[in-house]
Structure formats: C-alpha cells, structure tokens
Image (cartoon, rainbow, N blue to C red; front, side):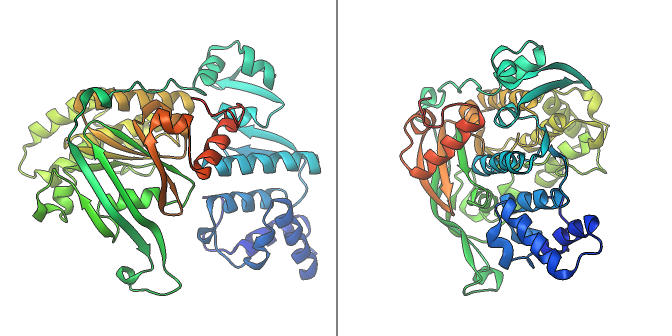
Length: 442
C-alpha cells in the first residue's frame, strides 16, 4: 500500500494529518483525535498498536489507516481512487461498508473511481462512465446497471458475469500428473530462518494438491491465507517441508532452479514492476532461454521471441521497445510470453488480472485459455476473484489460514459450497456483483 510511508509508524502518519488542520493542538488533543479517527474507520483495536509500521498491518488495516488520514480534517469530499483494487472480496465488502458509514454519519460526498462496476454499484448513487477522457454515459446507478446505453457501459456490465469455462479436462482424461504436493508446510521465522519459538508461524500448513496436464487449478482465499506461499514453495523460492513432485524432472534435478524453471514458470501480479525497465521486450522474453539453453544462437532466440509475441497477440514491431511504452494489459502479455518461451509444463498465475480493468481482464483470460488449449500447459491460478475462477478454473481449492478447507470441481464447489468460509467468500463476491448474497446457484 504505497500511500503509507513504510518507515513511519501508524501513529506518526495519522498525527501529521491531524496537525495539518490543527497546528496548535496539544498532545492530549491529538491523541484524542487519533482515537476518534480509529473508531470511525473500525480500527478500535489499533489503539494499542499505534507504534506498528505499515508492513505489520493487513491489507484491510492499511486501507483503513489511509481513510483515517483522509478524513482527519473533516473534508466535504473524499476522492477514493481504486480503494478496493487487489483486496480480497471480504475486505472489499468491508471497505465499501466503511465508505457507506462515512457518507451516512459524516455527510461526506464520495467520488469513487474504479474499473470495478460491481464495487461502484454497491456504493454510488450515480454513475459516470468514461472513455478516452470523455463521459460517455451518466445516470442513476439502477438505470445504468439495468439499461446502460453506451457501448463502454454495456461492456462493463457484461464483464460483471463472465461466461463459465466449458468443461475441457474431462475430455482429455486420463491426463498425466504434472505436479503432486504432499504435506507441504512453510514456516516463517522457523528453524530454516534461524528463528524458533513464539515468533514463528505457519504460512502453509500440511497442504496436499495435484495438477494434471492442461488443467487449471484455482487457489482462492483471503489475503494472507497462504496462496502465494504455496506457489513460491513450488518454485523453490521458500524453505519448506513436505514433498513436491514434478514428474517432468528427474529426482536429482528437483532442487536445481535452472532445471525447475524449465518445468514451472510464473506470471506475477504487478505488470508494472515485474519487467525490467532497462531491457527491451525481446531481451525480456529471451532471458529464460539464456538461462536454460545458453548455447542457443541469437538468430534462434529472436525466431522464438517472434513466435511467442505472435502467440500472445503482439507483433514483432514491439520487440525493440521498452516496458514503459506499454499498457498494463500489454505488459502482462509480455510477461506471459516470457514464461511460455521455455515450454513449461506448469505456469503459476499469481493474480494475473487484478491490476487490469475489466475489459482488459476479459481479453487476458481469453488469451490464457486459448494458449492452454493449444499448448496443453497446466495453470495454478491464484486469485481472490470468483469471476476469474468461473472463467478459467477446472478445479478450485479454498485456503484459509494456511490450510486447504475445501476442494472440488468448479461447478460443484460454486453451486454447493460445503465449508462456511467458502460460503462467506461467495456471499461477499455476489454482493460485489450486486446479486443476492444467499443465492449460490451457479
């Protein structure tokens, strides 16, 4: 959460905001105002953690601290710029409820800027749809949601409920297993980190999973549930216990990062920081080839780069340009080309669309499915968005506090969730889409 200074405590940052509007306030008055602000944003428990730093807070807590700073001096207007982006569905609902309460209790007007029409519809009285710097549609929320007139508005409404993925894995069964995980545990602050005792905790606790060729396994859960830690353990980026079997590798090669990267690749969440700004697109995409097969000629590298650019919907004309010249969606396509150029059996997709607007998300998901159908690559799809799972997943595993609490085929799990935690996530997701939270038939 870049809005907060990582080297200042929560107390100092809220205090600075209070003193802007009350420069002569005494320390006791400031302390009282800080307590009032924490109460207003639902952080009463933070009164005793005011000396904490931003990295020690959850995503939802950090966002609430940002809101507390914003309302410190009784503004008449609050501009909320993508305040729920990258938060899990439960936290998104909490933040939207907070904004509703501030509007009701303090009379604050809110300008809510978002690419998520569902989140906007859950809060706004009126909606303005913009395209290329112009307002193309304006109206009351219910009118825009039910009878949108502009092409752009229709696209946003359409992407609220993407078409579920057609069942494909069943047609290929029996498929070979490309990944088998048994009893995986990741402990932060444990012996592998040189620390033990009460300061250690299990980010992943006794997780077992399998993945078949050409299959997409969705991992969903709240922030901090252990999803990304599972992915990093598979990539051998974290110390871990348990067995991670990759049949595509020989036994002696399982710990080699070089050989593991030929079987497993990753596409990160943030397309704006995952690509080197000093390298051209061609250099970025070709880099894994140099690690895996350093003897390959430059001519062959460029041939393969051109082939990958075509597969992800980009032309050779972009090869000698730099990442800053591209949009988020184009950068994510470049990252995907880099991952696929070594023909991996598995690609880990860590929130691959969370930083993209909904129309770009849809085209990215379509591309991922198309590439999977053509190459047979398997995906581990990490997300907090059930609509992404509907569009892509064959099976779903739900994580809570480092454990898998429920698994199943997509349609079965979404229509009949057995675990209360899964039900709560689905209810939150439905609410964000403006649907009846208790209606769980997909």
